Each structure stands twice: as C-alpha cells, then as structure tokens.
Length: 100
Image (cartoon, rainbow, N blue to C red; front, side, top):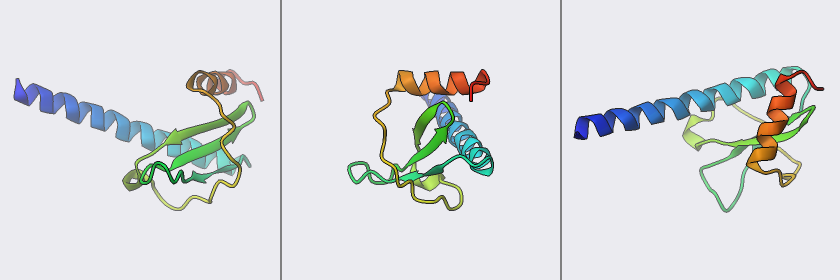
C-alpha cells in the first residue's frame, strides 16, 4: 500500500511538472507573437510566482513553484485583473477556438 501511495504522489508531481513546462512553453510562444508575458510576484505567496499571459481573449495567470521557473521572464507590470478560475478557462477556450 505504501508503494502505491508513493507512485501516486510521483505521478501527481510528474503531472504538475509537465503542466508547468507546458504553461511556460505557451508563454514563450505568446511572447514571440507579441503578447505581453511576465512574472508577477505576490509578496503574500513567496516562492510561487504567477506567470501572466495577456491572450487576445484576456489575461490568464498560472502559479508556478519558483524552482520550476525556466529561464528569465520579464516582470509583469500590470496587476491581476481579478479573473476567476472559470474566467481563465473560458478565456483559454476562446483563444483555442480561434477568437482573437
């Protein structure tokens, strides 16, 4: 049973690692297309910067553990627009559907 718990934890850690790399790849491509991208550092959440991306459909942000941030990102100077998780998902879905 203990080995199964370790494997499940490892699988979850692997999934989050992959998600964090995918988000950074999206941000890199967005930046190359001229979209505003950067890290926002919340003083209330040290060690968990938020990678912000201004998609044509609206701002989205993803918390990343500091140790998994790859490379250098500019500082995100705009503030968080207050979007909810549901709004973020809707903005990403609209972007994927081709709304720009």
